Image 1: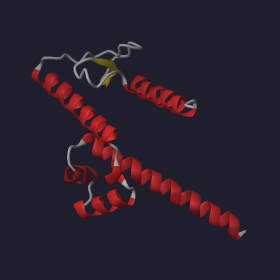
Image 2: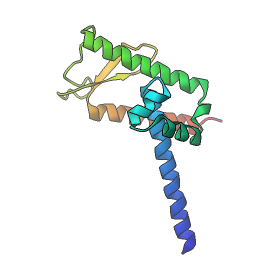
Image 3: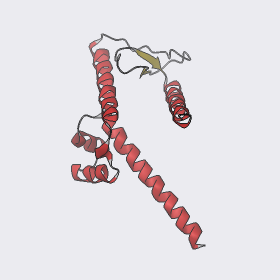
Image 4: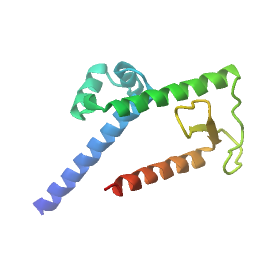
Length: 142
């Protein structure tokens, strides 16, 4: 019985750790500095720094940091362009034609103003498909 409890505890701890790491990375992808990421998560900078070290995010690779920076730049450029009226956000999804709020989806972050406007369900589906393709490509590498 203790083995089952121990396994359940380990699994729960792994889930909590994974959840913490995902939220830290999420905050870092949407901000430029650790202090602004801490504010976004509603925690003190000291707490954020503790979890940052705990999950070994200080050793993010150069490519990962570049991706985070490129994503932020692309998001900010589209947001500014929409606010300034240089880019018009359509009220219909380009994939399914649903009316309502659309989200700009970047196919390539190096072309920040080239976005596909998708409704929330289509945008979620697009990211699910991207993650699936990424996992498959990692699994099939020799």
